[in-house]
Image (cartoon, one colour):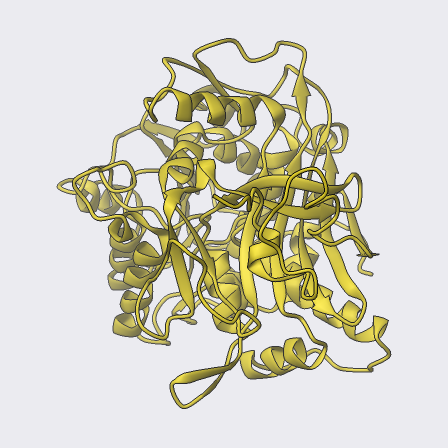
Length: 477
């Protein structure tokens, strides 16, 4: 395994960081630690006063500015020129519009999430499908085809998840190959990775995350508490649950709708914030989390799919199962009880956290050894050793953003790329110092454990890793 030596990368251009909330404030110190920039080479654009003092402490110019559809081009032109880099860590600013502008002006681009302008994810006038991540990602992929492969590099969806988890999947596939007695080299392309996943017998991939960080001041009624962007998390809770459906599944689940014919991806007629699934972690074993929408459930499945003409020969089922910190889970339950009307008070946990970690990884299941988990266990103490004012969740995302930036600087004419398109070892080498302990672990656990004993459920005991078993609360009507 590579060591944790800090390396710096020289960049002759300037960096404009949009957004200085919880993720931006974790990222700023890493930029100064890993990038050598010209004098005056770092500017922060923020729609509030969040982060002004921190920006000054890291020799960054701070501009209080709210980007809007009618004005964003003028504002970007004030701060960016050919050869610069735009790091977008904001919410409610269209990633598609920013990438298109950067492509036209020879500016590199990185973000951690594909975002639309406001009024999409929480808009009851739109159809359910129009409020999905699949639709926003499809718009970005159409732009990728339009700008072409030789345009300025734009790395989208590269935080922790989406982002680093795509690299975890590739490391896990190599580990699993060794674990079942196969000797393989890292494949050179997507088809090679897909054949490897098929040959080792992976039928299901879960992005599996449990945040156990806890504060000395608990959540109060009518307060939304979280360890990262509250606006971003609320959007996800209110969106339809989404996942990619693999070839091991005989049919789409009840209440699911194909995004489009032969897409291999579905959305459920229910919010992610009220849809539950079961997963497993090395630290605590089986757990129940929210079946949330995330772009990596599409990109990982697409990357690992094999087709025969218009039909899938092989495709894994891919989903995101997330148990946020306990105060955030209570906040999500309260939000649903309020009829999805956001709480009047909100708080992001940082200094008041006294214990816990963010355990983020991927669970590859259905093969001859049942299931294998690979990922990051980052404690609050270890996170503070690197960036004192942040928490474990934000540092994992910042590590992904940093890796994407350095990859873009090293590969400046690669067009639009997702995490699955990048060299996984190159990205993990950059992010590794900020991920705590990287753990690989096998388990005999299945989502059938403890099911159907006290309360009958609609389960398939012969095929434990089917979606119907992974989804929780499958009680008959």
